[in-house]
Length: 157
Image (cartoon, rainbow, N blue to C red; front, side, top):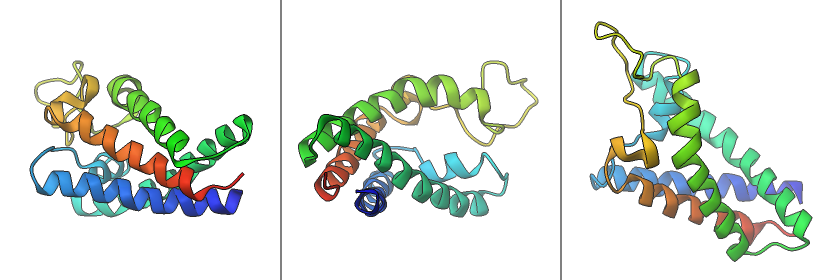
């Protein structure tokens, strides 16, 4: 089960990243997840994207392991259950994680406490990711549902 969760997490992350990148290229969102993650460790935007993708591809399989633990606790796995977990994951990400927790720990994200003369590299995502475009939460929801569906399809209990 652990091996299939890691594979599912990697493949799910590929799908999630492709959806996010395509949405950005089609100007449906301004969110750049790799940049958002990578700027936690460097100011250099080019390096930040590379580091951010690495961080994302480490986090994906870890999240898939958490999904697999849920599958194990209920005694079965399916793409439908995975998709449901992905929707819950997206709701948590869009409301609590990036709106409340990320600005507290991200060293280069603007906050309401940032002084006017401070230069922030990253705009805060805001509630339901609204600061990155009105479609951003919907895109994140679709991407996370796809991630969960891939993980649920691959993980076998």
